[in-house]
Length: 268
Image (cartoon, rainbow, N blue to C red; front, top):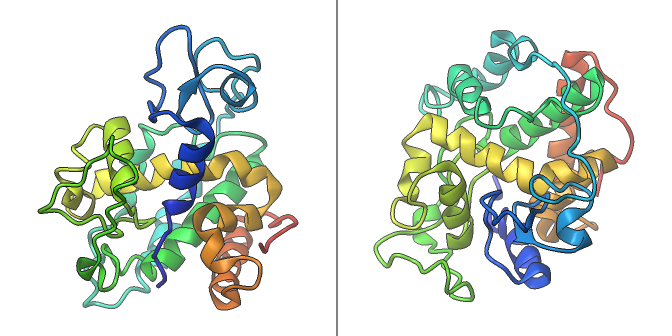
């Protein structure tokens, strides 16, 4: 499982072009909350994907997809049961925890047509399967030897006694991601990053938080765009075809299970 830099992409890119702290829709009344959860004015904040404030476009309407009827016991356990008996994630990642986390991110899987909902769910679980080895890993392999403290974000100062390696279904990584996820979800991301590996609902919520802010906005461009959003610099444009193959294989498998065509642009 390759986890290095999984969330670096969005953090660095957004910091560069927006030059503001993430607010995750806790903006002042006169500011827009962008599709990525940042506050500001202008088209990049108030235009396409604007989530709150004086938006110039309306938020995408949600459909009435019943997520629990798509992510059934058979679907979820078909993934989780492939983890070996000695896996730390076996018993930690549960369907009940996912559905509980989904209550706080209720737009996940509910935008577009019924088929769009199924494709989004297939895409999410394809990446989760790849990142965690079928829900085997809670923490990044050999992650404890890595710090992932980026001092270029002084607003997110690292706790010297903590390390910000990959944890959870999408392997949340780097101090600034822990800080922003914690602010949005309600935990001390810098002071207690370990909660992502000990609280199964928070663990899923961090994955859904990242998905909704950094992956969902590009999902209409095809599955390949979601790979680029998650780990593009390390995998796309021929950098690691094996991991791209793995993600695409899981995605098409889950689309088949859910009875939906995978669409175009599967690779990055």
